[in-house]
Image 1 (cartoon, rainbow, N blue to C red):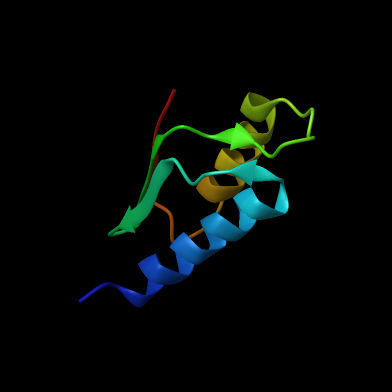
Image 2: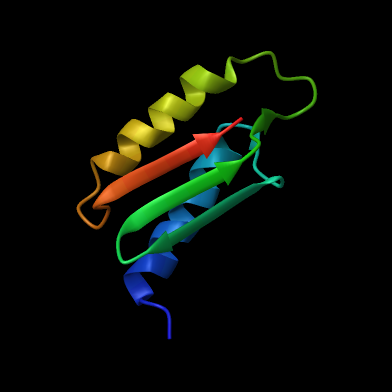
Length: 77
């Protein structure tokens, strides 16, 4: 059975990417024992001219500052 804290963290991650207009449909995002895994491809939504790497780095920094996150594994092309 999945850890309730991991489920809440996963939902938080999805909310953060959606709030910043990033498309993570082609990325795997999951949390296992406090370790966040983000793998795949992240793009910005159509019509958005933001820098995906800058916005993603902001999200990663906010994730690392959370108490329930032990580490972040980020492997995105």
